[in-house]
Image 1 (tube, helix red, strand yellow):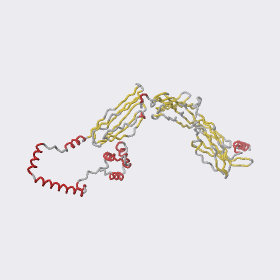
Image 2: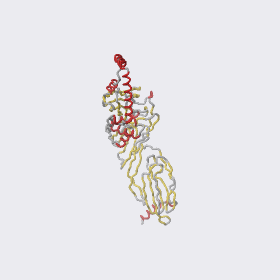
Image 3: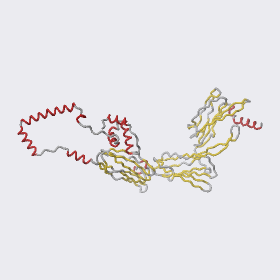
Image 4: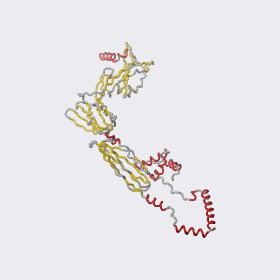
Length: 481
């Protein structure tokens, strides 16, 4: 009986707020730091409750829901009550508006609840401390620097789970994955992560605090006053970091130290065969600001792959296709050297490509020109013409009549019956097929689609099948053979 009395007292204290309203709303805790988890609770008195669907609170998604049911006695009458709980992580202060839903056949409305979110602060005596340390606070746009993140954990502090939230590096290039390490002394364990960053723009930039959420065991009382084990999350924050980025002098676009190399897979090719060139830039600097190296060369088709950056190396692959000799111009970059304090320019050497058969073709064209008649031949022709007289007129008329008849025959008979067709295009020869289709890619989406597949197959490791039906339609449409 004593236990029953205690339970009744607890019930009265827990549901006192429900004596005057069917829905009471509250938030726990009412004041918290940004990134901390809050619980929005609706205490509902009634037998039949249409539970509301709540997916967002304070502009953030609800991360978890829970429901508890209990019996309470009000004015010697027992009534059923529900506690509907919704967990969320508010990012700013807000007011949660009243919620309306049906209780025992009537629409009831809760009260509004205010949530106060404070700016994160650091407790130097906490069991977990996060710290951000930049190698520099003032530097040039694009200049690399390191940011060290240190988590100091007291050895006596126990955690059953943790969730790390990295800083938002908005306005900075992040170069690769952070390097991590671990150390300890008699009292603390230190976990370190070293980030490599570079500012993207000039001016004052801020790196927001990093966060680590720590889960620890705790106890709470249920609606009957019994202790229940549960998991409590708490968020710990680092300091903010302020960086001032200066504009590069002399209108330079790059900063650091670099080297550049270009390599061609061959220097002699057959007509319309591709030369593959790889351009590499190595160095410590803002590689991300380097644009494409694709050059314009008259009479040469140039294809460029997307630039790739891995660590301190930038790579771009290009392909050049032509039916005549050509020269690939030097690839170059200019940058502000932090050591010499001046703008420097580095370049590769030009690459000369020899196309086999291109010179012979020109020579053959020259030999095909009609030879000029000599003075002796002109004299003999004049004498023959004078001696033949009327005979030459007869042969001239005969030649004219026969030529006219032959011309009419050409128009009446299909050219395919008089001349042998050129050898049909082999669609398996992807390089030749690419050259044939290039003139039509800008005005036909289907051609562009085929060209993209061919370029990927020829100049990368991809091997994608071509729609042969579509290809045949394109070849027929543009009379490509």
